[in-house]
Structure formats: structure tokens, C-alpha cells
Image 1 (spheres, helix red, strand yellow):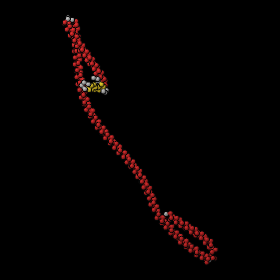
Image 2 (cartoon, rainbow, N blue to C red; image 1 turned 90 degrees about the horizontal axis):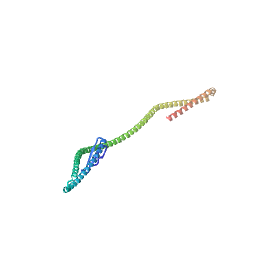
Image 3 (spheres, rainbow, N blue to C red; image 1 turned 120 degrees about the vertical axis):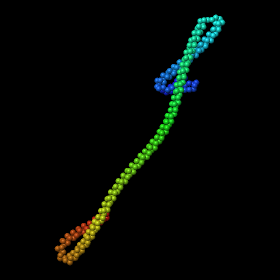
Image 4 (cartoon, rainbow, N blue to C red; image 1 turned 60 degrees about the horizontal axis):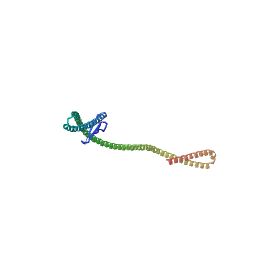
Length: 279
């Protein structure tokens, strides 16, 4: 059997005849190394003891055969005392070696029994560990499924967050558009107020135009009256030439003033016509 380190704190060995694998766990790597060294020493010592025992058994068997042959020859010929004594001493040594070998075998059997019991405990512990591993595998599978579910949930939440972000952007654009429309509405309201003010001014302008038209008509009537007076004055001048020299200067000045008034009235009329056309 060969002891093999499978990890820092665990080792195992196989018994090919029993078709069994034994394992042993340790609390530290130093204990594992010490056990491996001691295992190798015991293995080598057992091998040497077995080899020596086999050699001694074979030697004893050979000596026994030689002793029995020699004994027969000595009985036929003559008894040799020193040879029997030497064989007896050798037989005694072999018996002592066999006894020690038997004791060692019993010792190794006890140790083997102890190792078997330890192996049985290790097998139980290994089975329990395997059951625990299966349980951990199931828990790991459950955790993995839960992790996948949480990842899917996170993906859904991220997608929802993306939709919320896009909705916020649309809301921001709508708010900006609403602000622009409100600004335009305020501008339109301002323009409407200006138009209302202008509409309030229009009746006043119309009344002023009517007033100016009346003034113009009155001025035209006055102008007509003045023209009539001029004609009457001309008739009077023709009728009374003798008064022409004295009134010529006055009439001339009066005509100049009258012409200026008429021009002013015409200019005023054109201004009113232009103002009415602009409105």
C-alpha cells in the first residue's frame, strides 16, 4: 500500500486485495506529513520483518532437514554431540525469532485492526461529508437559481429605469414646449392688449375726424361766403371805382390773408384725408 497526499490536510491509501480506499484527515499539514513519514517507516519495517521472518523460516526448515538427515547418519554411524548442541542452539534462536515474529505479526494485526476501525470512522465521516456536499450542492443550485432570478429582476428593473429615464426626457421636452407655448401666449396676450388699446383709440380718432370734417365743411362754407363777399366786393368796386383807390390796399391784404387761410384749409384737409387713409 502507498500513502498519497490528496490535499494539505487529507491523505489516502488503497488496499488492492480488499478493493478498498482508506482516507484520513488531519488538523494541520505538519501532522499529515508526520503521519506520511511514519506510514512509510512502518511499511518498510513490516516489509523487512516479513522478509527476515521468511528467511529465518526457510533457514530453519533447511537446518531441520539437514539435522534430521545428519541425525539418521549419526545414529547409523555414531552420535556427534557438538553438532546436536549447535543445531539445538540454532533451533532455539529460530524459535525465539519465530516468537518475536509472531508477536510482531500480532502487533501489526492490532495496528491493522486499529487502522481498519479508523478507516471505518473515516468512511462514515466521508459519507457524512458526501451527504453534506450533496446538501451544499442543492443549496448552491438553489442559490444559483435565486441569483439568476435576481439578475433577471435586475435586468427588468434596469429596463424599467431606462423607460423611466426616457419618460423623464419626454416630460422635460413637454415642459420645455409648454414653457415656449406659454411664452408665445403671453406675447399674444400682450399684442391683444395693444390691439384693444388701439381699438379704444380708433373711436376717438373717428370722432376727431368727424370734428375736423365739420370744421372743414364750416371752413368751406366760410370760404364760399368769403368768395361771395369777394364777388360782391368786386361788384361794389366796379360799381364804385371812386372808392377803389382807398380800398385797394386793404382788399389786397385781405386777399392775401384769405389766400393763406384757404391754403391752410386745403393743407389741413389733405392732412385729414391722409390720416383717414392711414387708419
